[in-house]
Image (cartoon, rainbow, N blue to C red; front, top):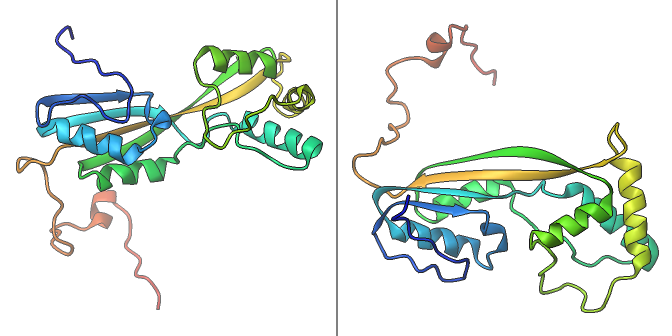
Length: 210
């Protein structure tokens, strides 16, 4: 798509209002300071019946690392500090599409499992991806190496594979929605159905008991 307009991540997206048939927001929503604002900007950039496709990391991402870091830090220091950015659950992310005024919203997810030599290998990979800790409430002094060593031990104890490696979960959430248009299908009024669901499914209908 040589005519596609490529935008850098930022709080303000340089998209012209009502000028795009398709907007793809790929793997940047979990970094946004205002996720709802990002979706609203994409919605405003769409022509009527234009489509928004978003891909982002979901709440199950790095659940193993989050658990091990928290347990290790609590055991060694007696407290916990934010180390892995919070990421939205699929239900919450799907609700954001409706809040932004998009029609026919759909949310789906896919869990991918990656394997690493150990927790050190995983953390080096995250840093190389640019996915290091950028939380405003993070600690501003170096972390004790003992915490990371305990994290690596816990990770190997609880999340080792049969080959002696460790597994890490990455949840990908895919969101789609359309800019409203009169040509789109509309939900029917409740009670206006002309066919019974039980007939369509070929199952007996059982009335609810009081």
